Length: 296
Image (cartoon, rainbow, N blue to C red; front, side):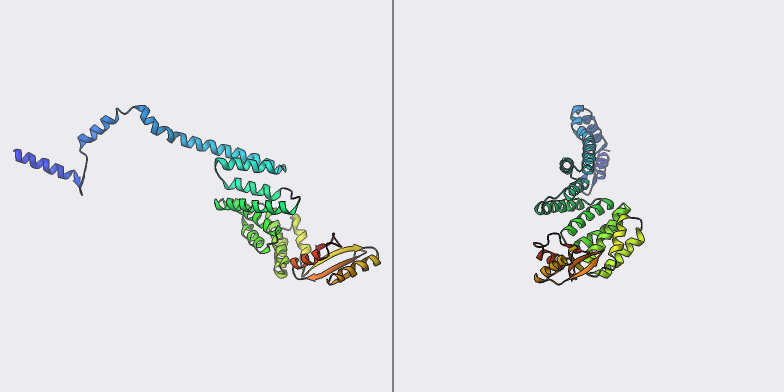
């Protein structure tokens, strides 16, 4: 009888083992829960409290971020660019977000640029912030606005290839019709400035077809058919003054001509195949003719 009981015990022990791991018996499980009942409730609270506090803190941060971003948007709309940047920084100190970086970029891009050095500095800051926003993988609409900002900066810095790429990447996801129309116009203008006149005409025709009622569309229509650039030296009512200007421009080594312009005489240098070539010619005569402009 005792041997049979020992065998049963031995079989039970084997049954509680599986691949070298001993499975707890029913009695050991009962002892565990009995001991657990004596763990002080305050000790358990040490583990539970952080789990409760974490979502509350997250909700508080989210609310504060939203308040700062709202305040920044109001400041931006009112032309208070430094305040908008400060609000964006406050939001990012809580948790970095694409919206806050975009707000900073907008303020840096839009604020007045009284001199060329400040313009370059602001554009570089804005470019960094727009890219930081994109690195956080925002939704399509916000990403498109960031890319439009990058395109604006590239255009201002005469990097027309980058401007065209960024505008085209953003185009379909821009939320407002006037934003898409403006992007199309800028694409056409950038294409013209690098001598892609046929592509520009196609872009302006698309602008006219898809956004006939937008204010910028009339400007696009006016630019259709442009195949060259020139420098408008000045317009004159006096023939002798026009002739003197023409002679001065020619002495500077530029090709120039006189044309009739709404009852006046215009003196133009050119033509030039690209906008940048025309800008170089403008710089050549800037000392004598500070009001000279690249056209059209």
